Amino acid sequence: MVSAWMMLVLGAAPSPSDDDVRLDPASIPKFVTPLVVPPAMPMSGTARLKGGGSADYYQIAVRQISQNILPPSMGLPPTTVWAYGSLADASTFNYPAFTIETRHRHPVRVQ
Image (cartoon, rainbow, N blue to C red; front, side, top):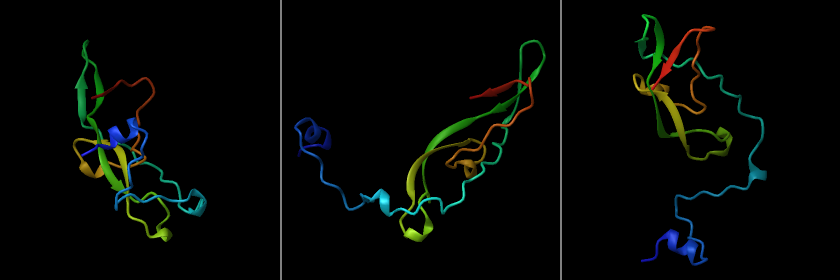
């Protein structure tokens, strides 16, 4: 059996699978889906700093998720995307990712 990698090296393109959906960009309606305003990423806790101070602490991971990206009127399945989110709350994994909000000159630690 010849792998997709070998086919590319040999100059042959792999055939699309049944799950492979190819779209004509001109057929996708533009500017119909409102942009998401990402909410704030929840803190995981507080980190102690050398010298006795503290910092907001976030534990963030990346995961592959399925999310509706294209306009709903097209009736297409969800798109596979990579998303960041809090390890403490699986519901925060989203594209675009939640934002880290902090105060001016306040230390933040992200793992």
